[in-house]
Amino acid sequence: MSSMNTDAGMPISITLEPGVYYRCTCGQSGSLPFCDGHHQSGEHTPIRFEVKIRERVYLCSCGKSHNQPHCDGSCGVALP
Ligand code: FES
Image (tube, rainbow, N blue to C red):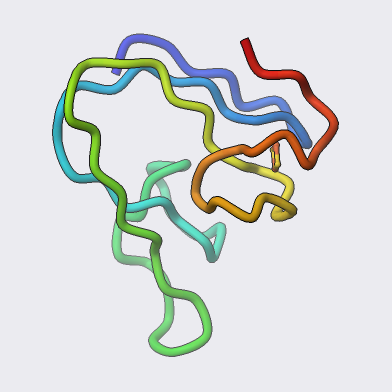
């Protein structure tokens, strides 16, 4: 990770190295936006995603995206 934008209601822009990541969906993680295992079983499960090359990704923080965990613009923010 090199940088992160965590403004509420905006996609979280973050540069990630290749690897497998788990997006927290319960909000209890101490490592947001990533899961650290704090979720209770059942209701909230982390969303697994993979990054193949070092790249900037835009993670949804509004819950409206149809392409979770990625922002799809449903929030009204135009992605670069
Ligand atoms: S932040 Fe949710 S769709 Fe953009």
